[in-house]
Image (tube, rainbow, N blue to C red; front, side, top):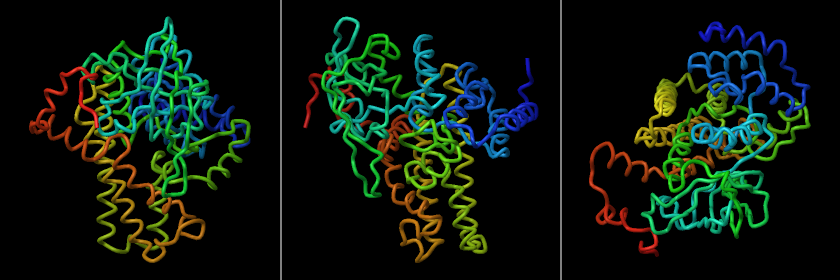
Length: 418
């Protein structure tokens, strides 16, 4: 058995990348090599694109890849939401069916949780799944579904028992997005991009074998998914892959050129690369000569380090069989505030240049695209207000809203609706 000390892992990874990294390989071939060798996501289990490495060794492996200048693994909902949840709750057959095509970038995924009438109150969702033999028939509407227009599969929560209280009648499914009965409609944002969508499900079908977790236990499974979404340093995030459609046949070099021309604020926020772009801004405008800006930059680094450590603690708890708790809400709040601080420092540093947009702006418009997207980070995945409610009730013991306790025990079918 090979040593898993950071030093040994870094040496092993460095040797591998020196032997295998070639930017003229096709993107699909490179991602497959990463997956087969276990260097795609080193903390993931062996056979799932990883090596089951501890955190310190994982960081050493990632640093070795960066030092080699090698391109990172796939990014998006597939790797940072779907895969960790499937690894946690999936059957062996589900893992074998879905994980290999996630790790090598073949399959894109989307998240089908929020609804027009169930955003902050996600447990009030109305999308129904009705059993029909070995299948489930799903009808309803979802919204704010990132990347649904490019997705082959979706992670879906739907109501399977309306006679149960709203949190207990939900089941989690893995749904084919390319079937009849699934209608995806992009939503144009103020950034000019259309990363979000609304999805209409009209008697779409899901095999019983694609139910994830126990019947009626979808809320608990969904909370595990959200614990990954709300962690700003999620281990399932690729660093450099585009959010959107990806051509696996082009060379990595060509993909990088294409990526530079179409990266948006969502992709930048998702990949965590915005701190590197902020470094470019502060260096270009000599911001570090200003002691106040230095102090604010130090505060951002402090928040990032704190969120990383908190995320590691949450991941360790989940790995040992624990359930997501209010610390996930703390992570979400911290991540949203950190991104606001990054936005404000960057725009203030640029001064009048901060009003420019597009290729003529500093950083080629990358930071400006991110700044325009930043408000969404306080809403997506559960708004700041919802997270504060969770913290207030579950950490500080504050009372729930009047009548909320009684409503939580009512069957969903009897709940009042606006």
